[in-house]
Image 1 (cartoon, rainbow, N blue to C red):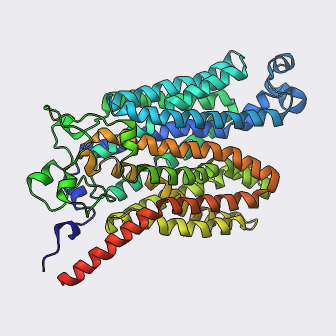
Image 2 (cartoon, rainbow, N blue to C red):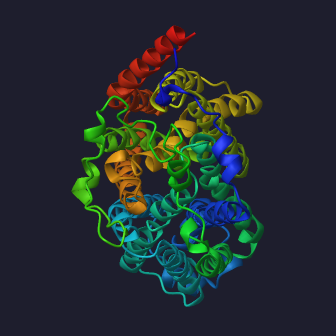
Image 3 (cartoon, helix red, strand yellow):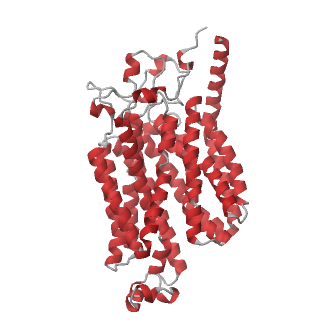
Length: 502
């Protein structure tokens, strides 16, 4: 008995290797480092908070004040009466950034599907670099300190930085099809973690000269990256005369469409599959779908809600992990910063391995479910980590593996799958919109989470913060449970058919 074409498994890397050109490598690297630079500037702000707080606090609370600035200048320009007030304002800036970033993601996704992705990404990088320069460097050089000015700049920065993720995921989705997508996107989604490490490195190299130089270096590098993206990034294979994804497979009458997502409706009738949200125009140039049409695509709402819970946990580690290590174990701030890198290392490895496994299974949700179940156990174990740096680093990396891995997969590979469904007829014009919806919803969850984490920590201490993380991780599993059940049924059905065929 012949196995149906939809059940004939193709090697996960066959299509990837046979279609990979030097253009694919250039696109991979440019999108990888463009988003890394955006994340590096965010990490710089996190790494220099202590120095900024000292600058904004009167000299009576800073023993180093007479050495750094004239006494009169320092006390005439301070913003806050105490370090606690300065720290609270810095936390407020984090929340302002995340909320504006979340709103911007919804808008940037829609814009990215209607305007050249290269223009949007380059504009966002260069403009954000100018805002970061004005926030951290120009204000310090001019000795201009104003809370409302800082808030306005950070709102604008969040909106500009939101152009990055929808655009880079859409470009990657245009170049890399379903074959090997989990592995490629799992490896590529390490760009955020690499950006965190890069930002920490750049800031630490020049921080001794003043925090304004940390902003200057990262802003300059980011601006240069935006210029390179504008002149070097190819947003689609058709720009260099290569066939679009799925074109060569259709001509060769392959059994499987490389553009069909892993969560697509395999059991839908052919007549239903011919339905399209978009109307095909005479020039064969697909039009971008609307925001609400993108929300109605199968799996978009469920994965968006799931990512809101998961990104809350992931970003809480991003913002609070060094502070937790310092306050809970009494370790030095520099040591805590260095140790926190292991969480990113675990996320890089987790996203790559789990993406590869999902390629082999040709299903995403079951892989996410297993990883998140282990994440619950790792969170419980990490909350009871002893006062030992090696043991803490190991458990931290394991936690990053099981939390950062699924987070990277949802925001990259799964978003690309959702944006290239059969209902969109393989069009790339839904990729940026869908990515913006998923990541925007996740950012709203992350923004709310930063306030909740500080509130829980203040009222109930750190142990209850980890219980909150466990609750959010369990909620992630709950939201994707319908997709897990459906994909498990498909796996069992395929297995039965292959058994009969043998």
